[in-house]
Image (cartoon, rainbow, N blue to C red; front, top):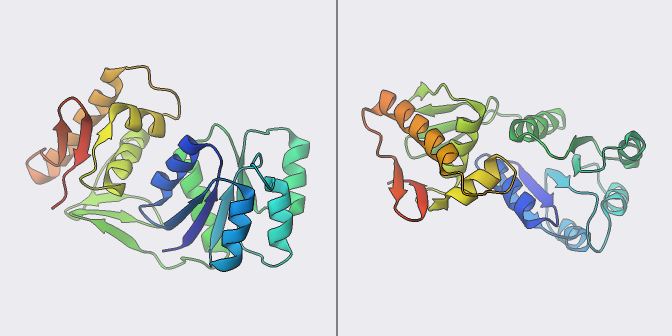
Length: 224
């Protein structure tokens, strides 16, 4: 597994990136440029994902300071979509950038591509969670050695549930992480996707009890 440092002051986005990357990588979260620089000096990482607008040291300054001592791959995730800003960031030493709001699959693909390009985590690995397997190169999810045919949202929801087996996720947790927007109590969206996942799981295993309903709270992936 590659070691990834996520630098983002927005708690929701930081947590979302952590949950997204955690199934296949070791992810460390920090919430300011100052904290990131301190940690970078004392620990080893394979890739950095950072925002530009950070408290303490700005993202631009952080890139400049890191580039004086390391060529570690850096992906910038930013709401600044002005071309001149993005050009400046790349010239400072960032390897890639992703504009907010972003698609989860884009983040996964760009992280994977950059790690391969820089020689980190080139070996295909499989993260096993109970009877599920997630491949590091294709991000396909298999159950009992059968590849699951999933939509993007189904894939993201299953990955999130598998990232913390037996943890209860509220509908708000699931919606805001996967759809990347505020949750206003639309129960049907989450319920429909959970139902579809259960149907696809049942088609392979013969039962649909892996995703449990915790009444009044939410859902969890039951892994023994």
